[in-house]
Image (cartoon, rainbow, N blue to C red; front, side, top):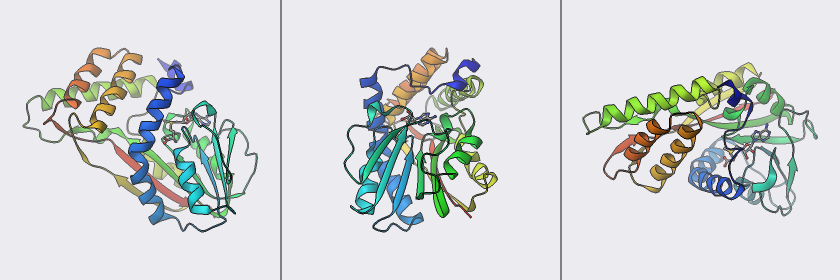
Length: 262
Ligand SMILES: C[S@@+](CC[C@H](N)C(=O)[O-])C[C@H]1O[C@@H](n2cnc3c(N)ncnc32)[C@H](O)[C@@H]1O
């Protein structure tokens, strides 16, 4: 199963389906990402921001409003087919984030959400992103810790079954090298080891109602992952609980970490 370690898990999906998935993901995480960045970063007009793995480009427009016309917002992705068109101050570049930076030490803020967790060598990816940052600039990374997902009420009907099925999907993820289920939990240490200073962690965690739009989205993601990893039946059990009104579960945590380049 190590074949998955070298590839992005959704790379084999139809472009339209994947664009729709990325749009919904970005919309769901827009608010917790923006509120966190507003607390952690001092935005000012004219600022230079680079987003790696920009996906649908949804955060780029928000960054553009923050920096104004005199600013610079660069969206980098290995596949720009989902990103749409860019209007100044946004620019797009199709590149691998492991490659040497095209504009070294230019940016005040380097941001990547739900990207590093998909990469086979996260330490090298973080070191590579640090080279785009000016000294004193801020790196802001957000990735998932799925290890905290579990039934909220252990007495609820099916809670044990849900937790056991989730564990099985997570183990399959870990064995495959596709995505490390608890990756977000070690993000702060990876950033410290990359030499970033003042590393601060902040988590977005919540309890989700089965059948809500987010729960249905999570169910869909589980089905995609389960199918890919030969755990389709287990993933269908997980998805059925997630779609059930009245069933409440702890969501995966979005681990949000900032650090400063010395
Ligand atoms: C799960 S999506 C997240 C998109 C966006 N950051 C968000 O939070 O909505 C991961 C993105 O990382 C991009 N990606 C994966 N590997 C990459 C690499 N080596 N270099 C640059 N981008 C990469 C993918 O093309 C995809 O757009």
